[in-house]
Structures are given as structure tokens and as C-alpha cells.
Image 1 (cartoon, rainbow, N blue to C red):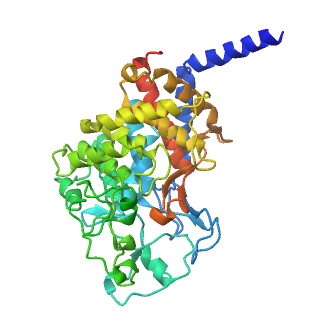
Image 2 (image 1 turned 90 degrees about the vertical axis):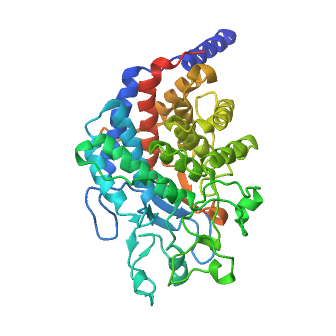
Image 3 (image 1 turned 30 degrees about the vertical axis):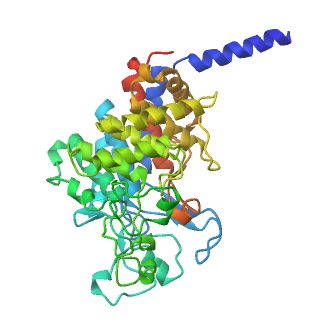
Length: 443
């Protein structure tokens, strides 16, 4: 009897592993996920508390941090990266399924994204009045800072007033182009070229490489740097935030593989892959993956499959020089998938979010027969359907996970999370699966 029970369990497990999710179930989950994103988007502005067009996200410490406070310090955080990322996921879904809820959401989110524009590029935080000091320079009567994170010292608040960065700029440029594809009747005027915004700041013959990059042997790569600002010769005062200038964290620029992939994605979308630094960025990413540094090459991205995800997206957008890195990424993902279709994260409680990064990477990488990834994707989609939470209003959402961090010393000390961001990952995966399902041959 025990033997028969064992055989039955093996049979059922095998059947569930190979069975494809039903098309109707996937479509229903996609509709419910988009419904959640519609319901959770802020429709009005409330002072500095939250802003129309954005989706909720939080910024919290994971441990006691000197001058900041105990573990759990933090709160709601308005920032450009969250709204741009969800906007881009929704636009991608609309291009595949034309769900009627999506264009009105993009109208609101696009307006919000543009509020972060500063000159020819974009910043991470909103422009607000300082809470703890008044600058003697009228140019800094308002600064870039979080709207809820409790900051106790003026120097720390000044440290939040960072320069524009390549990451937020890349995803915002992508958002602008996506918006024009969805709303041609309201088309924005796009920049004539975006390449020079990024190519001005590259990791070439620098006197003072970032200590995080030195630790991981990322030196003179020729790739794009994170902060859109010239480095000055390092001086003690450049390490310390000032109330009369923008802040370059630690006085040093850095090179991040996720940032580079996002820049490559934007350049591909604008047909500017001849920009100086593109080939070097591809080589840098491929080398990081070949050396097994996929998890550590993202200075601000500690999630184990975040780099895989953005590299696969850039490859799908047309960055063909990323193919060697994509092959390594897919192999790594397939090797680490668990029998239930999920992937495990080294960050506590982050398995759902991590699994969606891995699943999206496989879907964006394509070439399902070449990579023999079809059955892994079927299994991953099945797990994604099971891990979604059905809400009382009929919508569906997925548990929030870590999509960003404070970087360097704070890489595991300050995390950004958003249930809306994670749900947008799930929705994008479901949408891709519906579109590409027919191309997946079960192995």
C-alpha cells in the first residue's frame, strides 16, 4: 500500500511539473493584477505625503544604523524609479494585450515621472523643501529628499540631495517612449538623442575608483557610471554632505551592472547602440556574469536574479552584444529552480519577488528551444499563479520584495519594497507567457 501511495505521489508530482497552466487561468490572473495596479495607484496628490500617478513603496532599515535608528526605521517613499518601472511594465503589457485599464494609468504616471526631470536627465527623489536646514544658497531652497524617512540630522538630509543618475534617467527615457507608443495622440517630444547623457560619464582612466568596485575588481571597464556628474579629485570634504551643493555619495562615482543594463535598454529603444560605451558595458556585464558576480555586480541591487532580469530585458530590446551574458544567466536560473517552480532568495522573505525576477528573465531571454527553458517557465508560471493573493475587491497582488537598496555599506541595511512593483513583475510575466506560449516546446 505504501509503495502504491509513493507511486501515486510521484505520478502527480510529475504531472503537475510538466502540465502547462491553463490559458484562461493565466489571463484571469493578469486581469486581476492589472486591476490591483489600477486600484493601488495614487489618483490625487496629498501635500508631501504622496503624489498623483505614483504607486506605494517603502524605504526601511533592516538593522540598527548609527544616526538613523533601530531596525524597521522608515516609511512610505515617493521616488521616480518605482513609478517609472511600473509604468514600463504596464506599457509592455498594453502592447501585447491592450487592456483598457492601462492607458489612463499611464497618463497619470507619465505626468509624475516628468516631475523628476532635472535638466537633461532625471533624479531619484522629489524636489521638496528641506526640513532640517535652510541653505545659504538660494539654488538649494528646495532639495531632493525622501518624503517620509525619518532623518534627524541636517547633514544626513543634505546627503539625500544627490545628483541625477543614469538608472532613473534610463528608465524614465524608456517610459517616455513607451508612453508615445500607447498614447500617440498625446505624444511627448522626445530628446533628439540620449546617448551623450550617459557617455559623458564612463569608467575610463579614473584616479579614484569606488571602493565597492575595487573590492570586486571592477576597474577601468569603460562602462557607464551611475551618477551623472564629473568626479573631482577625492578630498575629505567631498565625502561629507553639504547644505550648499548636491551630493555624490562618498565623493565617488561607481559602476553597477543593473544600471548599465538599464542604460543599454534605453539606448536600444532610441536606436542609439552606436553610443560610446555600449560595447564596453556589454563586456563588463559578460565578465561579471562569467566570474559568477551576478549577485554582487549590482551596487544597489542585492536580489540574486535582478541582474539576470534587466540583462534579459535589454537583450530582448535589441542589445545583441549581451547574448553571452544572457546564456550564462539562463543557465544559472535553470540550475537553481526548485522542484515547485520557485527560486530561493538569500534575503529573508523575498522568495516570491526573486522568483518573478528569474521567471521574467527566462521569458525575456526567449529562444526557448535553444535554452530548453519551456518546461521551467511552465512550472514557474504555475507557481506564480499559486503565490498570488486574491484580495477582497477581486484584484490580485503578489508579496512585496526587495527591488532596490541603499548600496555599498547600506546594500543590506536599507531596502525599498513595493507590493505594486512586485505585482507589476507578475503581470508582465503572465502577459509575456500569454504572448509567447505557443513558442514554448515542452522538453
